[in-house]
Length: 66
Image (cartoon, one colour):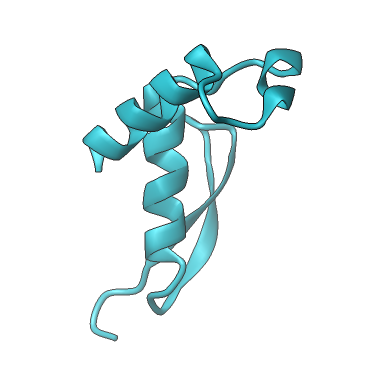
């Protein structure tokens, strides 16, 4: 997963064949991209949202035993 986040981060920074609106917004860091990739993958599992003090946002938490 880290490789995908690194790849996306580099493509956004270079702007090569990527939507040109990225120059108008802050390019997400590799860690931020990895977080959202993980959240997307987990959202297909049974679970619930909880507030994360670390990330200062709701995160998806997989329910154990389901």
